[in-house]
Image 1 (cartoon, rainbow, N blue to C red):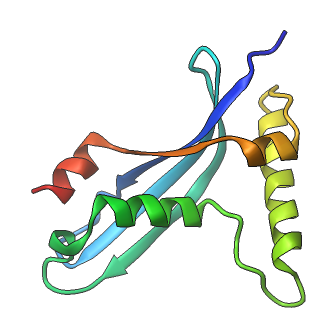
Image 2 (image 1 turned 180 degrees about the vertical axis):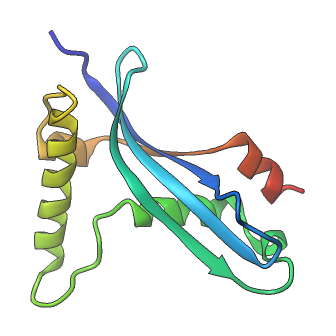
Image 3 (image 1 turned 135 degrees about the vertical axis):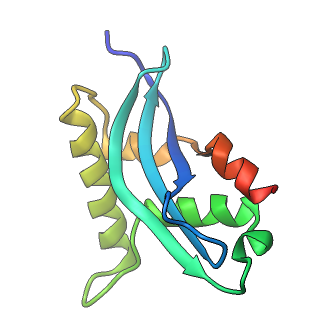
Length: 129
């Protein structure tokens, strides 16, 4: 019997090229199974923002968490696509990513899982510096 899915986890860290006026964050989205194994679902997400000379001083953990949840999808509708179509395609794509790693789970099950955001220790230090 396969290990049951426990949660979705988005792990965030800052990119090494970040400076005082630029926040550049990468996000890795994973499916965590019972026992701790994780299946990578998305590894191509992140964001960059810039602002005052020390934008890091004005960036909060909650902003990081909220943005991380948004950037891993579902994406906003575009063209003639509806929000529902975008969500359906998003969860189906995540399901296929899981299946490629021998994790059998439905798109509906994925959608119902809790979603946690984990902030790297070095990003947490940077935010509280």
